Structures are given as C-alpha cells and as structure tokens.
Image (cartoon, rainbow, N blue to C red):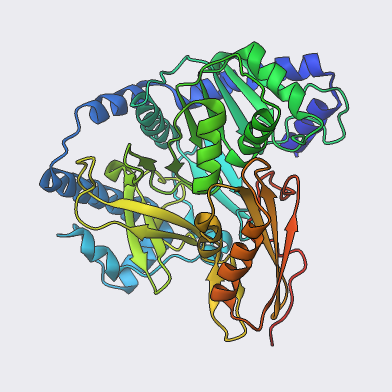
Length: 455
C-alpha cells in the first residue's frame, strides 16, 4: 500500500518535483546495484578463462554451491530433493536433469519457494504470459547481475558514469500528460529515462530535441520505441547532434530489419542481451551476432520439440530458479562461436513458447517464425504485428519503410504467409504508421486481444 501511495503522490506532483523524486530513487538504485560484491565480480570477469574445461568446472562448482544453499535454506527444495533422492554434490551439470521442472504456477502459488534468508529487493513481473509473479532478490545477487551487464557494455566502450538514454516501460509520466516532457532524469546514474507510452509521430520531434540536448553515449531499453524515432529521423532527413558508441536493446525481440534501421539512423552498432525479471541467467551478444551465456550466472537447457528452454540461475538465492520453465524459446549453437568464446551460446531468441497462432491443421506457429517472414524483403518492413481473427483468417499489420517498400512487396508477404499457414487461410495485410503498445509499454508481436476458440 505504501508503494501505491508513493506512486500516486509522484503522479500528482509537478514535473519538477517528479525529477527530484526520480533522482532520489536513483540514489536508492545506486546503493542496491553497486558495492563490494559488484567490484569483486568485475575482477572475476576481467580474469575469466576462455578454456572450455575451466568454464565447465567453474560452472559445476557454482551449481553445486547454489544447490547446497537451496538444500540448507529453502523448504521447497529440501522437500523436493528428499522426495527425488537428490544427493549432492553433482558430478556433472547433466545431473540437473534428475531435478523436476519448476513451472510458473508453482513459482506463483507456493510460498515455500522463497528462501528463509533476508532479501533486500522485491520484484514483480507479469511477463508476456500475463501471469503475475513475485520474486525476492538479495542485494549481493543484484550486484553480481549488474556487474555482468556492465562488463558486457564495457566491451563496446561504455563505462559506468557515461550518459545513457533508457527507453523504459515504467510509468514515469502521467498517461494523459500534455506538456511535451516525456522523460525524467536519474542524475546519480546520468540516465535519461524515456517514456515508451508517449512515443508517436506527433511527439517524436520533442524526443529528438531532448536527446540532442542530453547527448547520450548509448541507448538501451525497449527497441520498438527507438525504431519509431529512427524511422522518423530517416523519413524527415533529420541529422542527430550526438554520436553513440552502441545501442543495447532489452525486453523485446529485435528483428534484423529493426536492427538495420537503428544502425542506419543512429550510426551505431546494436548489441543485444538477455535476462528476465525473474532473474534468468545472462546472455550477451558478441561481434558475430551470437548470444553467449555468462556461465557464472547459471545454466540453460534445451527442452521439448520447439526450442523451449529451462533455466537454472545462480543469482536467485531469494527465490531460487532451478530448471525453471521460463517460457522462452532459443536456438542453441553447436561447436565454438567464430568469436572464439567457449561454452553455451545461442544463435537466435525465438520469443515466448506461449505466444503462437494456430494453423487449420493444428500446427502452432510461434512468434519467432512470424518475425522471419519479412527476411525475404530488402529491409522494407520495419515492424509487424499479427492477429488471428479466426482459424482461417490472419491479419498482419506492418510498418513500411516508405523509401524502400514497393507494392509488389505485399505479394511477397502474402506468399510467405500462405507457405506458413496454407492456401485456405485468408491473409489480410494492413499498413500502419506505428504498432500500438501493450499494457507494459512493449510491442506485442501476436495480439491476442480478440482471441478465439479453435474447438
């Protein structure tokens, strides 16, 4: 209730006072994210080995330490390990398969899933599945995760203390605010927080002016809003007055077309990353476009027939995740990445296992399959969204690149969609200026607001 009252006070305050409150919140985040644990983890990362044998031994050691912690401090896992005769330590990471899968419903409803230790941070997430989850974090885990993210960004020139502009799904402005100041400043972190909810063709010039004045060194956060601004600057031939080192998207799947537009408009490379609100292991992108697991943060396993994954995270002592069915889908790479990094790497993130549409034959088409439809075009479609009107009717909304898109490109899209869904399915193609956002401020690839029953 205190959090709700504080949020209401924030929303009713004038913008100048909101800026001050944002700075105070930034001080709180600084204390949570940075400290001795953060600094020690950075030293570990700076001296990490790239040899597969060393990586595997270190990952196994961290896994056993985490499992032993769960045995000592978590009632849910104490009972689970006893029921399934789990004896520690494990001799191999493969021994994880002896532990039953953790489902979201268990995470949501079982109070024993939280450890009997002091935790400093409470996180809540709805996620794309719409299921409300509550997770507890220790400050130590939080600082370790922050060290991994900062270490990744430092590989591309960004250091803590440099200016960054973050496109956030947090509600930092009144949704009905008219004054064109749709950003707030987190001064301790030198961060410009940018509201996703207000980005549209009428407000984008104000965003561009603010970015030109702030002059960030990197952009991070939800890429869909960045893409809308990039599209506007390109169509109106606007020259930006700042130079970025890199763009670090989070929270949404970025398509090759979106990546190309961002790099063209902002004259900076895009490097993707993966984590989750629940605290999944961290993956970060190398110069060859593959996502590498930071083995110090956990284990990722392939599961099922649709590239679904299970995650075990070593930075979730408050609410342990062991073989957690997070719902994401990824293609795991084989061999060694061309960049030379050993260990687990991911060639593509396919989206949520729960996000799919059905074909008349009963086959599921996942959002990862849908985002590849436009690859047959010369970067002439910027964003897409799909809605299944009924089993025999798919609508595809798309944002065209006005300079590149040609009428015959619709024929190509229709052909590709018929290959995916079959000739009996009606395809409706709807060009739009921008894709509406979901309640969390993110672009929804599959719009299920008008779902139907297939049986």
